[in-house]
Image (tube, rainbow, N blue to C red; front, side, top):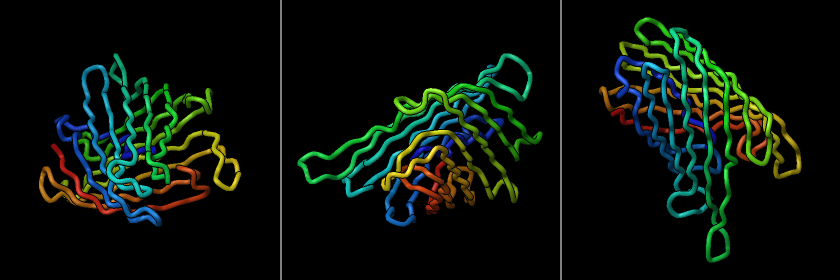
Length: 231
């Protein structure tokens, strides 16, 4: 999974601890039906903020145990009082799949380095946060000069009982589908809706919506059922 949730989730808060959580999802999409989990951390400081997440799939493609691992780490850097910041990011991962050979096959998710800027808007109480990023993107062995646009949001509702959060990515990447067709652009968005039973425990859903992503040409929607623990 390329991104989650989110996978750039930016939740600016008076307490940085409220942006550290672990999620467990059951993917209900066609030909999916497997578990995956998401771990993320967001921490602001006087020079900007740091964010990372790690996604892990289990039992995908007939594999027993972990079938895919992917992570992103980014830094928003600024030495001034402004909603604008410098953004740097690294993405990468790998996976395995079941084969008829004694050992499983493996694949790499092409490393990517991103550099650009971001703008963050929020209400005074941080109940609504939105970040827009525009970045140069280098994808190893594929596109040395690409771009990516990212939007990230987090909205607290019903006296913090309901959280609507997620991200949307649009980027340039050369991909060849299984039928031989070539695609040039990828879109991925993962909105999440959570009901917060307590300060720490939440249950909800994610809608994994993509186009020309992960070897699938055209649009694809994969919903999940999920639980989240916030530290």
